[in-house]
Length: 282
Ligand SMILES: C[S@@+](CC[C@H](N)C(=O)[O-])C[C@H]1O[C@@H](n2cnc3c(N)ncnc32)[C@H](O)[C@@H]1O
Image 1 (spheres, rainbow, N blue to C red):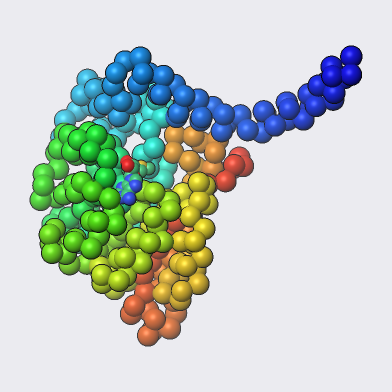
Image 2 (cartoon, rainbow, N blue to C red; image 1 turned 90 degrees about the horizontal axis):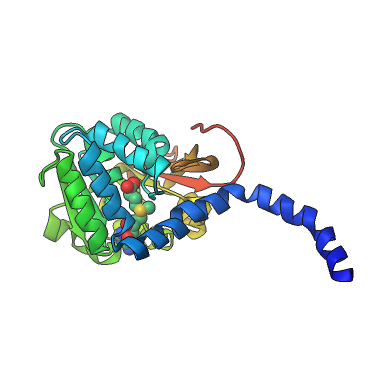
């Protein structure tokens, strides 16, 4: 009787917890457990399944259609950790405003972000995208070419950021990046920002945009970007990719006011996730 009474006493707490965490639990199921089960049963990865879906449903050479087909897959079938349509709008807006000549993406995954960015670049601009996982890179290469972008427009570099960044200039001919999109290991953000600084790879007034800085979180990166004096920070609000119930927030850092600093300044943007209902805003 006593254990039953204790269990009943905890029931409201348990129900409240379940209710509060339901979006996370659903995400865990859609993003981790079900794909893992399908990988085991079917012998293919979710990225390969997504590509097969693209081949069957997307219009080759049409980046918009490729992206919306990816979105359909992610909303209706299996969750993919691509930047997605909501945050994608912010990336596109920033790219159109800044019109960069050279863009660096860290973390290509299936090539969604690469296709989105390549489509938003001015003529003659180039995207370098870095991915260490050869299986993801193989899918991304096919997706990028299916969207109609050649090697001249998008170069996919296979390797971890820490190895690739130091040889970007010599081996890949990237003098300086005007726009960097960090969307890889959150623990690598600070190290890689400092590597880019150290190797003089950030152009004057460049923009650095980093995803998910609060959830899952990159606190050391944020602290550095806010306190080192080179960046101006701005928060953007958005929702977690393919999960509108889980909002994200973001910051963008740009030049400080002093003209001296402005010359050396870099803009950095960072999305951060937080569970609370609400509309996306910037
Ligand atoms: C969130 S996904 C990137 C999504 C992509 N930017 C998009 O919008 O479609 C993260 C990717 O970063 C890659 N990654 C992890 N560590 C990395 C590193 N050190 N350097 C480059 N990429 C890395 C992972 O393999 C994964 O494919």
